[in-house]
Image (cartoon, rainbow, N blue to C red):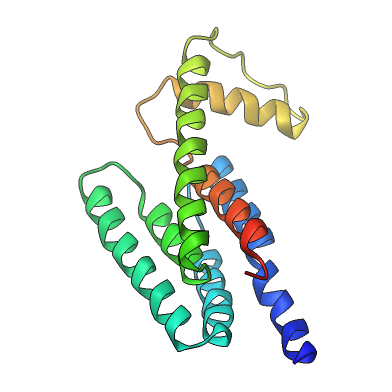
Length: 173
């Protein structure tokens, strides 16, 4: 049985770099690559299936219900489509307690993200970044500019925070 556990370590931890990639992409381009969501879903299926048919069914049911609820929110303009897919993909690999942890931390991180954007909205307008400026400096100026325009929050960052927390606190459960 230890060999099977070793084989499952990679799929259990694969969400970590994938979630960081999705969060980074959402920050810089306000898009989440479908390939990140697909890879998360595949890793989640492997982990849930290895745990047995009941854990797999529970994970898929929670992911499907969440997908439907978030798709309705997306339809109403409250969430991006990439966020919907990313959240559902993360949930496929989590047991129910992990899903609970994911929801709690994602909601808290989303609230902090919204608060940060409200604070940034009140900062002075940025001057253009000089060419060759350090990447974080350029991102900071772009984000200050984005907060003044109607648009979306990079909610993939909040989803990544929730997903990373849930993976790290439920690995091996």
